[in-house]
Length: 290
Image 1: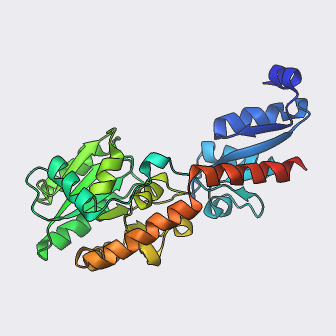
Image 2: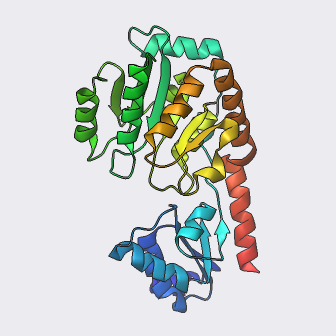
Image 3: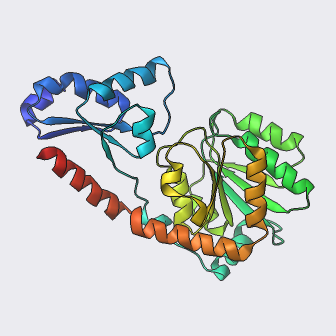
């Protein structure tokens, strides 16, 4: 890094990840340019050695960029820029009722008009599928019918599948794993569900909004910065009762889902496209360069 800095004489050294930021910070005295620490991508800090080291480097860095206000707060920073994520144009499409129906007939075996729920997240402990599955068992017991698709993979897959089977939901919930056609499942869905212990600016939520879906999500990290009551509902993390109420309200009201989905879609087009992100990035770099 020192050799590269001496040869290239950069005006800006921008490090995106925590690992990279450590090396760039240590090498920055040998660069004539300004070092930017852009390693905050989550709205939570785990107090382990890795996160504590990143915290120290962040506080020693003069210029910091996060992808949410929550990320700055979680790292105890009262300064810094926020650069929200932008969504790939291929995800930005709010399908018509006819398009949605045709996708369901093509992709869902024996579909009979059930509400279609979708989640996209790694199957790891802090992605709270346990609460979602508990809420869906409650709703099934009340007579609600649904198809719930879980997109993602990870170390918790077997435990989650066992919970699904144990609660008698094997015919209602399917773990799809890692797939290449995520946007198709978002576009055939009715409601997007996201429960997480902490988020910065969640790409999964933004992609769901880009497909015109209302979002029901845990009120953690930076989630409130991108979604809320106008296009869905926020619930207290691990509060199954609140999640049941939010799902019940939207599952029983297609018209409200459509209105909220349109709010989601317009929010993405206005604030979370890649051109918007690039423009904001230029603005941040320009301010730092002065």
